[in-house]
Length: 72
Image 1 (tube, one colour):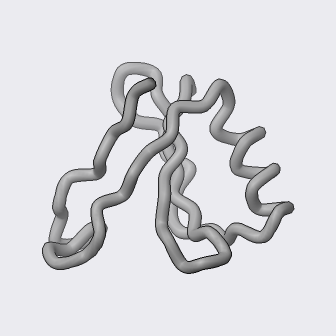
Image 2: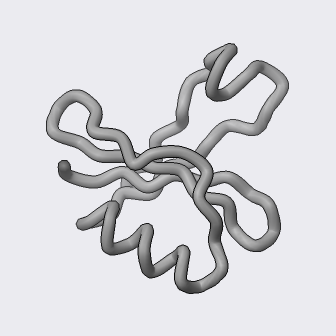
């Protein structure tokens, strides 16, 4: 298991906010669609980032922001 945390960033993740936990998935797009269909809402992304990875952030029905991280 690997967990990644989005570093503090004054624009996208300001200090004093909660860290964003990323879950490793096989397909960001497929998993994102399934979670949106089950009540999560869009927060940020999907974005293609370095090293051939793709990430996005969602908000669960309880208001918690979390991320998905997978191959591009």
